[in-house]
Image (cartoon, rainbow, N blue to C red; front, top):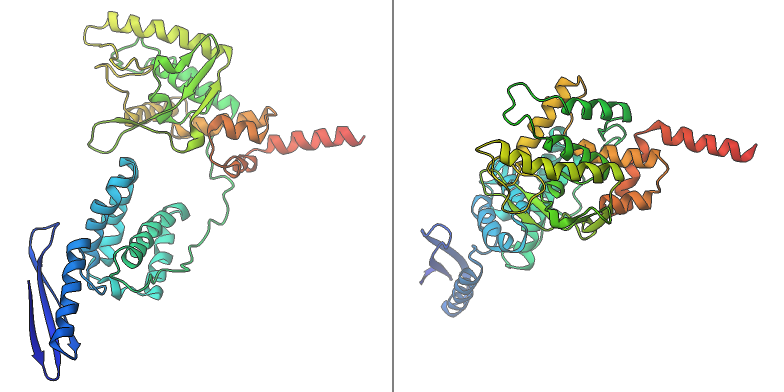
Length: 382
């Protein structure tokens, strides 16, 4: 509903509308029109835009109002739930606490750059880039999709790069990996299901295939061809905070792959398949997996990633090794392959890297590759 009034020599309109997110009544106004007719036309357009976009015009929408609506209406239906969860968390914990009381039009490049510089002191380059990407994407939509902002002030923002990535990759040397795996064979104190070899099989599989933890936990026996010695990686298990786990597509298009497994791993998986059935029969409250899962918890549901991480940490502590995460086994596999003489192209394909540049980072964390390469060169030129 629109109302009009003359103020001096110019006209002003005031449009009332219902906020579709909160259900509360709101108003927007604008003056400076030479005639009432001009104000009526402008009010009609404002009303149409509000109805279509759900946002206030001319950048007057507050960040605290704009971002939740933008996420819910324009992001949630078009991204994976885990991606939306990361975006929503960054908006709630980083963007709104700092910018919530600002109107879109009040954000300046200089003030925003200062904030980015401050963030970089507390977060990694990658984390800051993710936060900035959300902020910039939202303001780009305000310009190009909703026409409520004339331009995005966040162009050409500088984010300080990591000084060095050397040493950032954490992995087990061969001797450490062997010590870690041997320690898993010793049952945990007060363990309920001591006959189970599930964690030994899981961590060995990660160490000898380079699978991501979500890819491994999503495996069913239909994905395992023991005769061909192959694993089909075509999904990943996603666990969001306080939610039901679900299967999703892998991280990237190249993450969908078929990988070869060695004879030791084949034999271990065969043993694991028998052991799983034995454990179900041995313990009264242990249920079989309805999903035909290779790995599952005692109630038959998917094995939880946080439980796996906690178990991994305990094994590291018992083995008196650095406290790493299960992802370190993926890094370990990549480094060990390269140390064994595998090409970067092969390693990138096996691990499902989206770019060989991701694989190149492993060359910087091991001295063995450098010394072996130099030895080959010395042997060649003699």
